[in-house]
Length: 591
Ligand SMILES: [Fe+2]
Image (cartoon, rainbow, N blue to C red):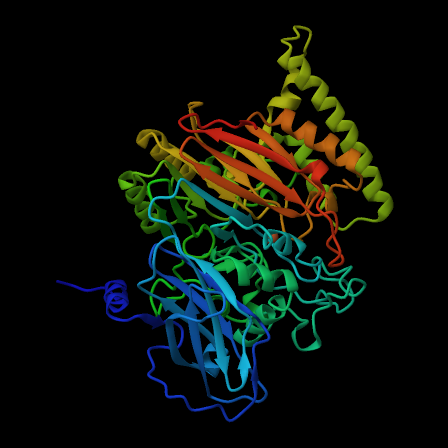
């Protein structure tokens, strides 16, 4: 019989009360540290199962030292009068002084309190929860794209106040790799133009683009000083996956848009450093002690929810297609070559191993809801080609005057396209072929999303359809909110998608000129009309969503903060939105 490392971890878990994941097993004494330490980054928990959960903290020593000792205590009671677990562990400089303990043999569906001690310092008390054996409801709050320089993580703070959450899902872009300035040292880098004014400047020892391990570690440490981040981690266990910015913008398996081998060195090394820091700082279970590249994994919430956390980004993704590669010297778009490349059956985001794992898991799962926690939008976001051209022009470097001109043109175009679409829907026989073509000739908006990996998405849809499952896809990445009905090429409804806006990262309002509520709502209405499967979008606000699964329905609510340039905020309840999917319908309806 051949044992894999994963089997070993399972056996170890049965044999020990708790397993120290990131520091290796260590029988430490009670010796005190020779330097002063502090718990500046709070506590966290994650990857709960019915009988285990990871607890996390990080020590900040006053001087660099190889190892530090600390102890932990776990109790069902807030006053720690009766302990269910306790122990001494050691953390190392090599782990950036982070500690992860995989608590074992816990009771299902139970709240636990935990804290750490080192020298005379005691951490704040964290609260976590194991997964119930047979839950009648599972409530998740879902996040993506938290960008420190662009604002305060008020969305995290707000979710930390929700009492009945089972888990937090973070779908990636937990950090961003950019520095304060572009290479010219003057132009503000992505999402940094307001940072100084709002007190969210990157510190001097970490204000350039992240390239090596120490850079990534410092960035996580900075993000974990945010009050909202500390509160949410303290109160609720996280289940996370990375997206691209945990490494570099538009990452794929062996490169990234924001990586230049010539000036920035080996991408493989940069990726290894980035992922090591990720596993140090996020309270999640590694696939294996020596493999920081594999993050996909699954969670079972009784017979109600099977949750599959996928990696569409780092492990196996083929390089993104780019429209700019399909224009000839006359400036004409070569749609035949583009279509052939787009539909290429070998293009992959998941890779065959992960895809087969997912198919096999879904086919044997008896849970009502099959849920994909993953990064990029799966719904078909095909926009009229002329609109796409205008939006892409807006993303370039423009003077204010040029931008205004393009925005005026874009608004005019949208009005015309909406009017034509309304006439199509009303079966207006006076429509000309040219008018129909303006609406019906469409192209995928985002080639970095599932739209750019067409064939693999069809196979996934085919799997869900053949297995007759209730598929719910959760996505982040876009910095805006979306709800899509997922349909295969034959028009079958195979699932639904609920996609979350960003915590702070700028969305479409930033580059499409949606600066007032009126323009945002008019654009939202237009896009919803032009894209058939799109049931909801919010294009100008930051926040999070809760997704609540019950046996007969899943209910999603999007919440929006009214402000993220300070920690004083209110929720914008006027824009809050709830939608639901009834079991066995794969459709989205109003609540
Ligand atoms: Fe993002």
